[in-house]
Image (cartoon, rainbow, N blue to C red):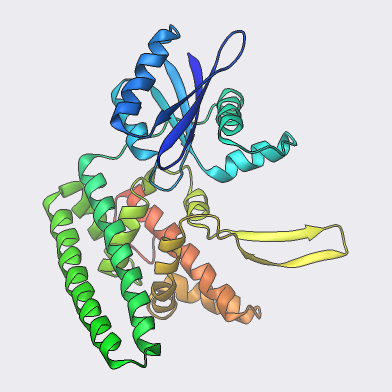
Length: 318
């Protein structure tokens, strides 16, 4: 099987096909027409099967990834930080699209990343609705902040109308999300399992399902927490350099932010997380460290109930 590295952007993508003699490179538009041209180009190279590898760059990779899977190709979608670390390990200073496509191909050849698993149509719709909901909430915060500092009544009146429209649309999308979940038994089962965990509300559960659709399929709860950027990052060298541990924040930022207030609720009403908070407080840990640990524990508990397909049980460990 040939290796195909893909460096993808909003409008175009560069590819590097590792051949027996030298790499073959090309550039295509990130459109359905460009995808067809890629398939034709591969045929011209005498290639039928490839292991294509690309970075999870925003949402720009998704259409191409789904197209390649539908064509029967093996596809891997990797965290951009993995490619960055791979580049640094090779002491590469040059960064451009052609070089990146080659580096991604080389990474794929040497590291053999696992195959990407596409979402089901129901999961894709839920993910799209959750993303839209997140965008509406972000716009609502921005306009509300503008209104708070506005001193002109004509502008303020306009901002209030915009905010009212955004609030109405947020309620509509929220209802669409719940209806969509209720209409699909698999999603409904996951939703009910997650909602059994004290600290999680319906909004947070929907965001968790939209951002981590394959949560139960991670190798471990720790790996899932790392994907959200909730694992501790230590900074230590020898005996003289010892920094304070902090959250890595290398992951799904919007989901991480949405867990902040649920973690505070869980510290009061979830017996497992409350006990965790009390232990950390007794050890003199700062408030933000305790909240971060509670956020991480919420992901661990979510992983556990989905992995075991059973509701939250505070006595499960015993």
